[in-house]
Length: 221
Ligand code: AP5
Image (cartoon, rainbow, N blue to C red; front, top):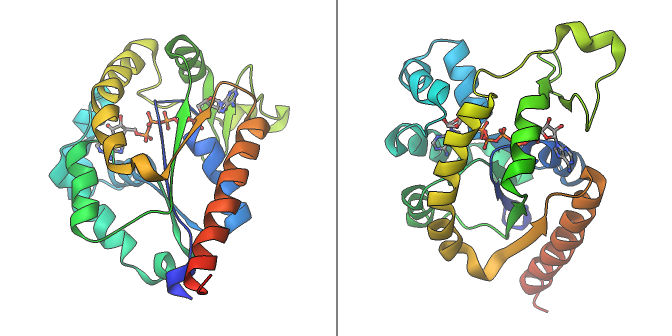
């Protein structure tokens, strides 16, 4: 039923592993994965009005304006697949205004997953990241090496340089405290510096217990 579907927010610095964990979460829980970064990159590629506006900010590593992204996310969350399958928000909210906009719509998550990774490790992850444009799979030249037969088609994001990553990190650190305040009661803070399977174990143990508790409340105990 619509009311019982999982509603998950995942947050963390750039390259903390959100996208990597989201593909595993999506597979296990069947939720709709909504990455605002992926949505914006698709808009840029297709040269939509939103994409044309967002491109300059993204290339610089800056956040796109709240008014550009909030409407898109609200509309997407109201679509049928999100209502029936549940959703996993990745990269949103990224500012307090975005968190307040969700609350104003009455949109509430079951869990707020926060991946913690030291800054110097994030820079290494950013510069070594490679993406498969055909499948969307995420690799790292050292930490998650791609199979030899697909290496030639892999791409690097325009904002995946040490310099742009620094800008993205500053934005993250200046916004995260104000966002966390909105989700204190549902926050699960995880060590994101360990291997991806170990991070995922922490996530499943949190989600399994939170979702079971939510189901028990709905079932009357
Ligand atoms: P977005 O696409 O959301 O980028 P981001 O937050 O910077 O996050 P990343 O995609 O860089 O990293 P990730 O955490 O998904 O890490 P990943 O799993 O790939 O946003 C891009 C831009 O869009 C923003 O800068 C902004 O301009 C705009 N934007 C988006 N949302 C917005 C919003 N709400 N408001 C305003 N503007 C917005 O992993 C990284 C690397 O590490 C990979 O190579 C991976 O293989 C490796 N790795 C992952 N996990 C591990 C592990 N456990 N151990 C070792 N290596 C690992």
